[in-house]
Image 1 (cartoon, helix red, strand yellow):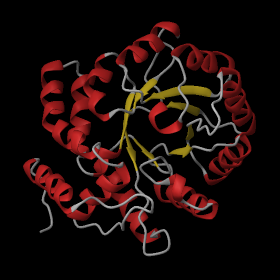
Image 2 (cartoon, helix red, strand yellow; image 1 turned 135 degrees about the horizontal axis):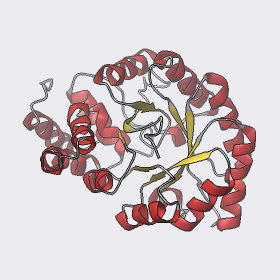
Image 3 (cartoon, rainbow, N blue to C red; image 1 turned 90 degrees about the vertical axis):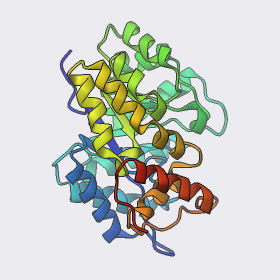
Length: 298
């Protein structure tokens, strides 16, 4: 299997806010930063982008503005995480209308849903759009855990389910997906501290909010793996690991927004019930950025 069209470092956008609305000029600024950093794809409206805390109109606005600003320079992967299939179908249609390259679908549950129900959820979304679908497994946030067997069934039986983002933090699941799909199903790592190991076992990409803060190091890790230089890849990973661990200690909207603020970008606070970092945590994060030789605003 050749390299998939979506590969490498997929940068996850935060959604910047003014007091009461989405800050569109700042959103464009953040998109431009990611474009200039040479990440391989841009992903709005994931958990980092606080999609769960946006109104439907805000969600559609961010989707449209992102696709318009990226303007085909990179793949744009729009996140969809809805409790109801009907709402997910509607957002899939909107994603296609505004020009997304693909959608990333997280099956969120209120009631526990079984494999048959999960399959039906994806089948209905796939029927509503021609976009490639990245199935997203993140049991810690969604309440739904998709086994490698189910994931490969989605891939085999639903034409446009073409990728999987695996965020359970279990490397063995990634290996199992490769085994069950005979290496045909591209998988993407969504667990930041697992990035080096995931690339080592064949991940096609790394979906990370860290690209807002340290894109050069994220890209170095991918490049060294592409060159099969494990020694330099390990060094690049170890250098960035303190930052990766720090941003995982609280919600990604809070930590990434704090990091961006320390770099001089006023992206607003996360929306309630999420809270900004404490001063101590924000200072630790800023100090890590300083140690990574990134200029930080005093």
